Length: 128
Figure (tube, helix red, strand yellow):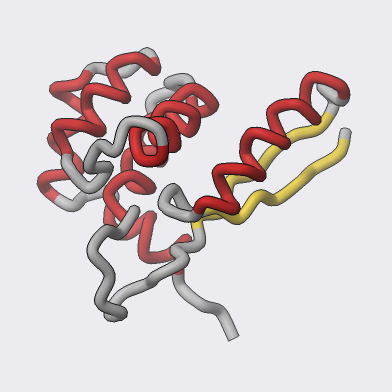
């Protein structure tokens, strides 16, 4: 088995392109296992009109509830880059998550309560 750590940000166009290429690669090499590592292109406190922290927290929820993480990645990237949807909206993310084998109502609860925030903070913290 080959393990690849993929650093990504849902609002990064290069990450989106890389995600598409990764999907093609995995079709040829199914023995590759992916570990997802969120890495915000514009971390706080940098002023930026859109941040992907809530979408990343949603990914952790989908992952922990055995939803379809690959589909979630695809849907979030498409929502942002192809449909111009607000991926910082819990409602938008819940709609996407409902297509990934998780309950949309249950999905929004931890996002609104920020109970997934510690996972996001730990994952995106710079380690020296």
